[in-house]
Amino acid sequence: MAKLSNNSSIIVALLSSLIAASIVVAAGEFTIPPQPEPGFYRTIEECSKKISDQCGEIIVGAVLEDQDISEQCCIELVNGMGKRCHENILRFYVSLPEMGISATHVYTRGAQVWNTCVLKAASKI
Image (tube, rainbow, N blue to C red):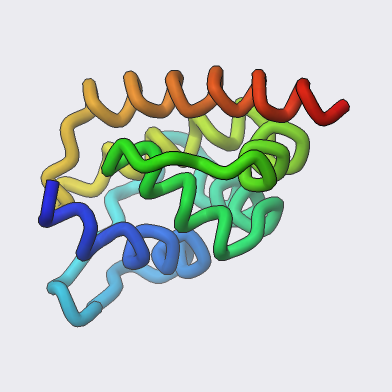
């Protein structure tokens, strides 16, 4: 998982630059694949605006590196971004072959993070 820790913030940065065809970063070149359906990247871009950068990074760490997620970031994820956005962003992560991310890991951890956050956010309603 050491490779992922170097790339978590890169993934967050990618979310705000999805319209570009490719992105060159210090860790290497990432090519954004074709959209799986029309408007997908616009949807991802809009989703990324619904959560703070800090919580975005924490959520990426929770999904990719099994890190803990704060109650505040859970509230932003569940009440701000929502499940559909969360699932679409997971799809985006998996679509980046340069990251070498296991789809099984991302989807499993993504569901676990979502379920944990639903409980944490519900306790604050």
